[in-house]
Image 1 (cartoon, rainbow, N blue to C red):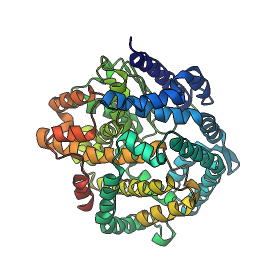
Image 2 (cartoon, rainbow, N blue to C red):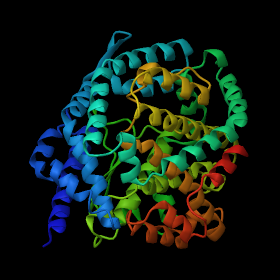
Image 3 (cartoon, rainbow, N blue to C red):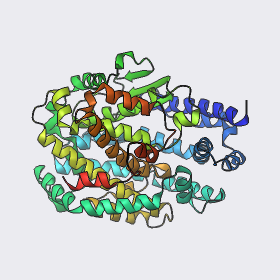
Image 4 (cartoon, rainbow, N blue to C red):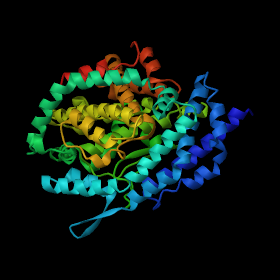
Length: 483
């Protein structure tokens, strides 16, 4: 066995232990996240000498994926203690609300469901106060990542992420600036209209009001709790996929006090052990969350088991995000609403869901602009966060979230690339299999053929295989601007 093959085996074992730990903690099966012992058991994987050696082996795809993974895990290993402390502090934090101790992680769902504007804003203040309590440690963590990126020979953390992840940030940023410009007028017209519908003056609107708007309480009857799993099962059956026969995909729907309120997918062993976790409550947001994570789950559970570890799990996560968004946005298709949920007139819901999609695209585009500055210079980041997101979204932005609202390694760019590829993939499916592609077994076979490849190929390559010139946001921008 070669050194690289042995390294890959150890890396896959580490990955499985780490993701199992995240599953147990987020699924509410244990009280605290404990990743430090796992990193310590596999410390030999993350030595600086190992990282530097693998950074020289980037001439082929497999080597590039390994180099990206080990470098980012090396950085996380350096700050794992701070990561763990922040996560557990948030997990244990509570606030006093009407005589009760409310867990921090329950505040966001409470805000989304609170019809009174003043109460929403007060809950948001309490949430932001707790978030801010860990900002010193978050800043310490980012400074450590920035320093070590330079220590590895990169100009800065931004350059490390861009080069290793192949994000092409210059081109992506330009495309997102164009998207922000082309959708500005339609966005602000729709924003005022939707805020008026929930009796919120535009000049007083903040993020908690948008959360309440997108909760879509008036549409709950269209998305009943008891129909969630049958809707997923029926959708997959239409594509020729029998969820009940996927022994490697476990649906965890048990209610637990510490279980995350949002659905999530954990690919522990790909494709042998994939967890799709949900705490069903019903409503449009819960359906979207379940469908999104089901897209991840189907992707990972259909990967060819004979592929090497770098192609099964590493590579560009923009790809799995695109598959997740493809399922996530099924309720925007009136054929899906009618066929799967029996909804004859879902026009009002679809208008809101399309606006939410536009909101998220503008939010993540402005987050990208912000993170480009954040990872170049941390000074005045708080003010730039408020300024850039506020300009794009037209509502008050909580400054306290300026670090908590940042995922490592420019994952916001991978979300954006996922949205871009989803629009191209969906257009391809509709042209080839029709508007009701989700009820075509041939479409299911085509998707499975993509999923089997894991993340060996990048979205650019798959887009070209579908007849596009490459990965480009113009198709997405056209959809958004034509709302």
